Image 1: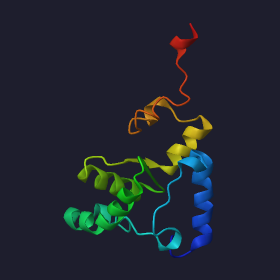
Image 2 (image 1 turned 180 degrees about the vertical axis):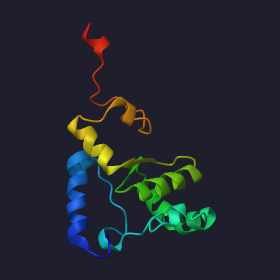
Image 3 (image 1 turned 120 degrees about the vertical axis):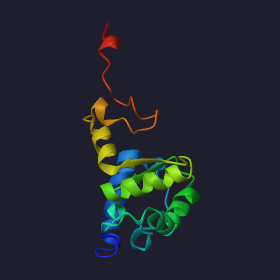
Length: 135
């Protein structure tokens, strides 16, 4: 999708991410938009069994993420999430990986406590109702 539809789609996604996390929390990668690097997990590669080759291919993406200094990397799909998360584990969790849909649900207040297990401690309790605090 990144190369097929080009920068207009990238701009739409950037708008959504900035609206969800706040423009002040958005850290851009370089290169970006339609020139961004692939994570290396799509097209069936994640399930191919070639783990070391997949990780080697993903080094460029991992280095790109590391260069931002960001605490979170937002991913748009399951394959990207699994690959980027795996790449972070290989670097001792240099960043937290989070699905875009998770942040959308979190921002709308509809993300259940059981859907937060992989979030960082700073996001696990955002807008969670705690009945004991009402007493």
